[in-house]
Amino acid sequence: MLLCAAVAAQCHGNPADCGHYDCPVTPADLSAVIRASVAAAVDAGDLLGEAPTEVVVERPKNPEHGDYSTNVALRLAKPAGKPAREVAEAIAARLRTADGIAKVDVAGPGFLNITLAADALGALAVSVVAARDDYGVGTVLAGQNLNLEFVSANPTGPVHIGAVRWAAVGDALARILQAAGAQVTREYYFNDAGSQIERFARTLREVANGRPVPEDGYAGAYIDEIAHAVVAANPDVLSLPEDEQTEVFRRDGVDRMFAEIKESLAGFGVHFDVYFNERDLHANHKLDAAIKRLRDQGNIYEDDGAIWLRTTRYGDDRDRVLVRSNGEWTYFAADCAYYLDKRDRGFDRVVIMLGADHHGYINRLRAMATSFGDDPDQTLEILIGQLVSLVRDGEPLRMSKRAGTVIVLADLVDAIGADAARYALVRYSSDQSIDIDLDAWARQTNDNPVYYVQYAHARTRNVARNAESFGIGLDDFHPELLDNAADAALLTALGEFPRVVAAAAELRAPHRLAHYLENLAGVYHRWYDTDECRVTPRGDDPVTDGNRARAWLNEATSVVLANGLRLLGVSAPERM
Image: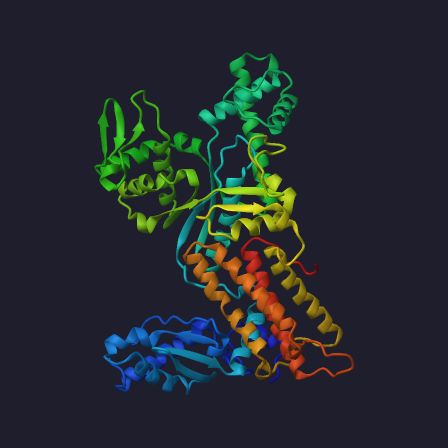
C-alpha cells in the first residue's frame, strides 16, 4: 500500500476520498457502525424498538477483551423484550460483516467486545499525521459563544498562587473549549477604585515618604519598587498635598502594577482578549441600565432608603442591596451590571472562575441571572477552585521573597519552571485542594509527570531523526503490518484523543487531558521497548515495510502528544 505525504494531506483524515487506504475506525466511526447494525436488526424484525441516537464505545480495561467495548445491548434489552445477550448476538452478527472489524465477542451479561482488523486500526496512524494540528479538534461545542472570566485579581500586588491556579486552568480550559468547537473570549475583570485600591495607594504614599506601612496596608518588596518608580517618574510628587500625592500613587501605581501582572501572565503563556475595568460600568451608566432591567422584571424594591434585589425569590438565602441608603452602589450592583453587559455583548454563556472563598456567591449569582429573565442553567456557570499549597523539603512555603505575605507566580516559576508549574496546576481537578511538592516537580525523572510526558514526545522526535538517517520516511505505508499487541494498544490510545478532548471541554476538566497524556506516554514507552515494534533495523538488518509502518505510528504519537501538551499550554520539546 503506497501513500505519499501529499496524498495524506489531500485526504486530511478522509482516506475514502482518495482510495489509497481504508478509512480508520475511530470510536466515533465505530459508534456509527454499531448504530447502523442495530438499525438493520430492527428493520429485519430481529429487535423491537428504535436504534439509539448515541452509542457509548469505550476501551476495555483488559486488552485481551478487544480494542473496544459497548454496553448498547444492555440498554436495548428492555425495549426489545429480550435478554441482553440475545440482543447482543443479533447486533454482533451484523457487526462481524462490517469492514474493518476482525472479531466481535459477546461477554458477560451482554457486552460487545470488538477487535478491529489490523489494517483498519493501523490506518489511524496516517489519519492522525494527515490531520496534524487538527487531530482532536471537534464540533461538540460548535455554535456556542462563551465568555470565560478568570484570574481577575485587582492590581494591588503580584499574582498570588490561588490566582495562578486559575491562570493555568483557565487558559487550558479556553484552549480545550476552542478545540471542541466553541467560540471563546478570555476576559480579565479588574477594579482600579474601591477600598483595596485606596489602601494600595496609601501604602505606596507612606513608603515613598519613608514612613511605616499602614496597619491595613500591603507588605512586600514590590511596594518599595513601585513606590520608588512612581517617585522617579513624578519627581515633584512628594511636595504635593497628601490627597494629591495619594491620587498620583493611585493612578501611576495601579498602572505599573497592572502592567507587571500582564507581563507575568504573558510570561506564563496566559493572554486575555478583553481587560474589563469596573470603572467603565459606572462611566457608561451600565449600573443604571441594570437597575432598570431588573425593575422592569419586577424584582426591585426599596426599603429604609436602599434599593434591593429580591434574590430570595430565586433561591438566594437573603435579598441583596444594590444601592445603599447613602446612594453608594454595592459590589453586587456592579456584578449585575457586568453580567448584563456580557449578555448584551452576545455571549450565550458566562463562565466565571472563582476562588474557594467565593462558594457563597453561587446562589446569589444564579438568582441574579434569573432576575434578569435568564435560565442560569443555560447562561451562567460558576467554577470554584480550591486552595493550592507549595511544599519544599516536606514543609509548606508561606512567605514570598518579593511579595512578603503570599506566594506568587514568580516564586512558583522560579522554583520549577513555567511548564512544570502549568502542568502541576492543571493536572488535578480544580475542585480539589492540592499540595505542589516543588522538589518532586523539579526532578528530571519519570516520577515527574510533566517530564514523563515531555520525554515521550522528545523520544518520538529522536526516533524520527534516527529513521531519517536510515532513509525511512513517511511514504510507504502498510497498516496491516501494525499487528503487534503493542501496536494495537498504542493505536487504540491515539484513537481516544478526540473523545478525551471533547469530554474535557464538556466537563470543564482539563485534568482529564493530563491524565490521558500520561497514559499515552506510558503506552508509547512500552511500545518503544518492544523489540517487534522497532522503527529502525538492528545492525546490518535491512529496512522492512514493518519499520516504515511503525515510522507512521511513531509520528502519529508525536502529533498527539504535541497537540495535547499545546492544549494544556505546555511545550513539547524536540530534545531532552
